[in-house]
Length: 53
Length: 448
Image 1 (cartoon, chains in turn brown, purple):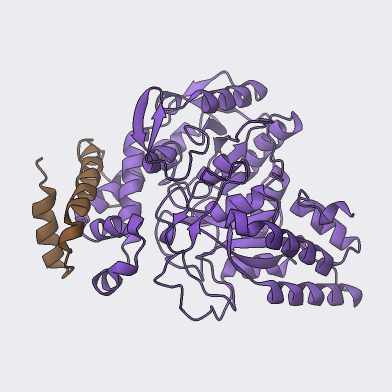
Image 2 (image 1 turned 60 degrees about the vertical axis):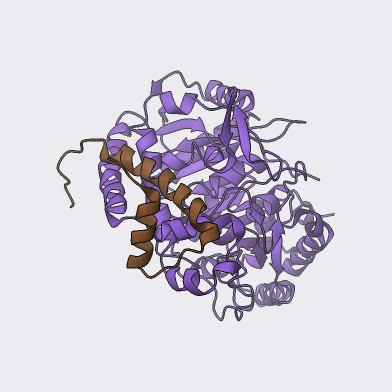
């Protein structure tokens, strides 16, 4: 899965109407990239059917 | 001087002395004098409720004179993390966003429970802004100092709680633990810190409540005080019965990596004292850490959208970018993390069919200097914040209680080990900790 943190930032910020000031953009994107790596670890594991979906 | 008036008096000692006739007002005056003397250097308390505390102490003394039996925590001074409501003082959450808010009108449920048993709140304690951090370096309220070495961090986010207890300003403090915010500072300050069973403590009246990870928990200087305070916080008349024999195993794999010589030595001493020879693997620790971090990140953005839109500049520079990112997380990441968590909790329950208590490191190292950006562990440079929580975070999504136990290290910086038990089995944690305490392997001496 390819995650582009800057593209996501732009789309998600528009979706929730949260302007990201330019001086915060790179740091916010870096945080998103870090969290995306954690999410990927969870998407990579096959889990049995959820007993409580 | 009555031993219960000294800085090293435990809550149990104070409550017994007050029940035997010592004036609660005298106890509170002694605590307020210690805070007055030492807080400027430590910056543990951000608000001191002196008048309120003296009034409650006088009321307690008066009630006892009229024949009312004082409670289990009679006259015991305590502090609370600055996100917990105390009527009459502003609940700041360690944030400029709330610094000028009106004072709380009511006490949080946990304050009511403790004070109903005679404990007396003396003030609010510093924290990382809104619980987002692990070093209590706060731009609005200043950094809290580790009483063992003022150049070092006490850890966080309940850093003010750990520093106040370690310095003997109060015998107990109430913090909150999401990814390790009680257990981590307890390790770095050399005190006990309990993350209770998820959902067992009423968090009504706390700023930012409602997340599925965080729970309120006590910090103290003895295993008995942990049990006493936890019993009162959960409304339990007594702790769960002890388990004999108590089956204890060490957590392997992940929990044997990323720890320096101090952490390894503390763990080895505790394991040897407890006769631990068995090693078991905690299920999927890396993914458990990932899941709890993601869930906590997403939930930390609850109710923040309007504040981020309109008052961004008032957020702490250390949290601003993180809260912005957390407000933009895809829902599917959060849902996947919660699904993993349900599976993981079932795996942890299976693990506890083989063992009663797991022992593991609490932090990878002793307290770093304030301002440290990276930690060198095993020859590798790692970012300070996530690394300090390396061993507390994998447990955060479980329903289970965990206790940091301070290992006795006279003349050296403190560090703790972490004990982990099935839900509602806090008594087993206290049982193992008491055993270490009785052998002088665990100790939380007050730092002068």
